Image (cartoon, rainbow, N blue to C red):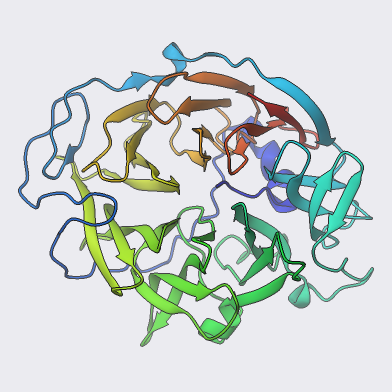
Length: 422
């Protein structure tokens, strides 16, 4: 599962040359409060509520777990990846790559007029050209009615993605998120359809954007998403569950962020009383209940969860600090284990990750100082550097993890992508 690459992000990639980090955050959002629930084992392996002091190899502690091995320093340990390039796309804004579905197909978006910002349709891209999943927008479109294909993920059976209205000239463009959720069945001949929207949920086009990049993910029956939701006269970040068939409104999983679908439910990050995302929870749809998987604490209270991913039984979490130069720790573990048993340390302030069946890949997004892209096997071996991309460090893996989409960017010109196999 991985992040989608939008035209808006392509246009802002050049800001990386000035050292800007673009993550589309809302600075005025009231942080949600965590639910009151006892920690107990879940399908991913629960952690005890008895706090123990983690080893000094990490700058934060894991509740109930002692970390004994030192984290791998990514830049020092990674060797150049041996990839087999298959074909390329992009470089002119006509096609925007998102994630490889296989060695021959890439999900993304396409435009017949790349000079027009509001001209993109969701598409399956191939070396022979795009197959649009949604109709091409008209030549003249009302900005309020144009939804740009953006963040998304794929499984063997489904592609799910977020679309949103765009307004580069508005001061509110970076703090509002007028989203739609789309789903497309890869088998059976069905059509792409909207399964939910911010306007339907909140009755406004001014839903606040979240502080982190969030991706809609699916377990094959539902789409999981996080959004600001009106609760009385306040906004609260909530994780939502939408049925893939579009039948009915969302189920509220709970206050939180960063959903990552797993079999029969979803992992998500839960905030503490101060609004910091410090707990990974698991929601079981059949029981309609959430249990704690793991929690982190730190002496200076600066560390929190900034990413959460899953593929099959594999799990990945990113933990970042507000302290300058602290970097990000990436933890890898398997369902049934109480917590990550492999840790890596990346120097970037945030990680944009992609989870496949065979490995985990990541980059630093639009962080202009850290431009490297990496991949690692789920057991922590075979750590490789995929290359560099200034302002657009966002590799993407196919669901089976054997194909990777590697962007190439100098931070000034249109991004291009190489589809390659490991």
